[in-house]
Image (cartoon, rainbow, N blue to C red):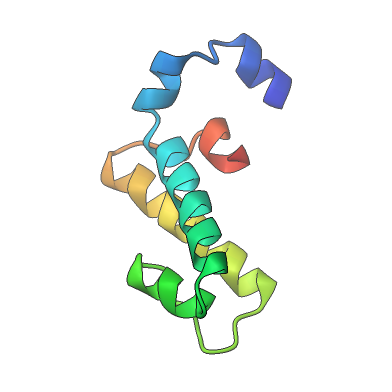
Length: 86
């Protein structure tokens, strides 16, 4: 699926218009920033990811996926392969 996506127009223009991809990248950057802070969970809460006080990897993955889905839905579109794999 990744190769199909790449051959079907993996271009800068397509990436810049893909809201789910942009949100996924934004969240990856915020996770990196949060990992350097003293409180990773609190940092993610500040950027809109509502984690519990002792989240599992599954909870983190689900909340990040929901944030990407919500951005796609707010733009009246579906989460793309690029957004999914980012």
